[in-house]
Image (tube, rainbow, N blue to C red; front, side, top):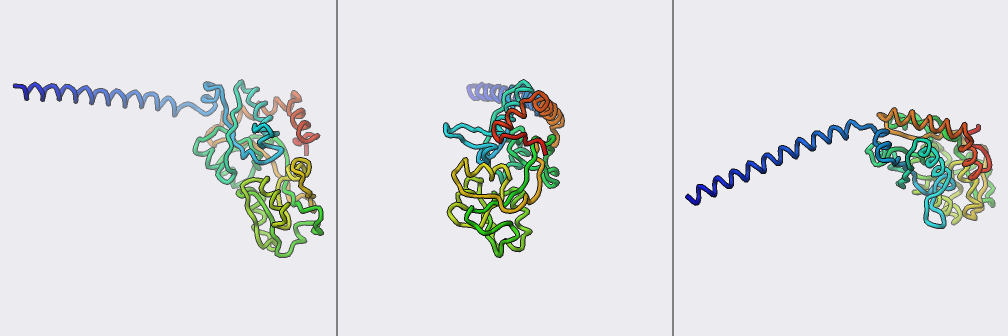
Amino acid sequence: MKTMKTEQKSKRVMKKIVIGIMLSVMVFTLFGCQSSDETTYEKIQSSGEMTFAMTGAYPPFNFIDEDGELAGFDIDIANALAKEMGVKAVPITTAWDGIIGGITSNRFDTIIGSMAITESRLKEVNFTDPYYYDGAQFFVPTSSAVTSLDDLDNGVVGVVTGTTFHDMLKDKENVADIMQFESDVDNFMALEQGRMDGLVTGKFVGLQAPDKYGIDIVPAGEMLYAEEIGIAVRKEDTTLLEKLNEALATIVENGTYQEISEKWFGVNILER
């Protein structure tokens, strides 16, 4: 008799467990479906935060300042755009080489990190209208006799991994070795140490290096090619793309953009 009661009790317990599991699955399914149906823009609006990625090592566009805080043109632009959208911009630093994978795997909402718009990148993400224009520039030590990238013979050139600059250098027959770095800060230091003949980076970044880091470098030759710099979003985030473009147009029109640009560069870098 005691055994029968124990069996009946066990059955009741198992029944409760099964019912509990079924209810949990139903709740998970219900809220999971609701979550998956929420667009990135809706998530941003409901949370009040928009995450954006950059390396944090591309001064003066994004870098860690003397107080250990993220600063730079990209940071100010992200804050201005978020303000227009009624939310807060939350920065996330990541390695440049994996930044596209980071956004496509939902680690952050946008990339506001000085990313050039290219055909290959457009296969994976969408871009806003350009928020500034830049270009690739070859820099050498002030003591160098090299006057352009074409002057090199079996040259050694530094570049940040995963950039369009790196892709361009791979096609240069007169460049024997490409030294790759995680950031332009490392790139500058390596050139200062005499480890290479020159480096390629964004024109504005290189021009700021002497004042920012006390490094004696100068541009050698004309700009190698021009670039349009945009904000990257996931392919499916069409509403977010639209809202960012609207916010960008607004800060350009009301003078906020020019104020930020002149703060960092003394000129409006959205003007060609």
